[in-house]
Length: 191
Image (cartoon, rainbow, N blue to C red):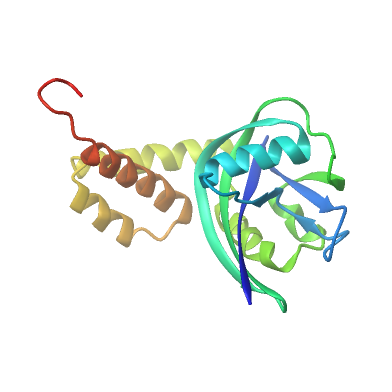
């Protein structure tokens, strides 16, 4: 059985998420997060930016990794990486979908989602918060990370002890940033 590796955009705007209604194929008229297959020699991020341009004719900015999910369909196995995004440029045009809606957290169950996307919807039900709450959570996490002195081991302990998914994302992003910075080696010549 073949495995499909795809990416999906969770596009945010004014405390709402963009859902698109598939206009083709096996899941026609079911709702999904836009995205598609990763082509050879593409990163997940590059694939997502390309796919959203092809499907909606907009430029996006990826703001955060959201989640990986896997789903077994009758004829293939799906591995999907979802990213939180915003629209940098343009207004969505339906090039491959037959409808689109901006959904608030309370409206997420108002559409018939493609089966694999339900895990992302469940994730959003737990993580979607209004701007004021986001700012409060970011401040709280920043204070906790400062108490850790941004020490990698202490940040990992903080990550493991945190239950709130949004707060975990913030801590994870900081951990990854530190790990990436630690992996960059500059020799004495500045190269």
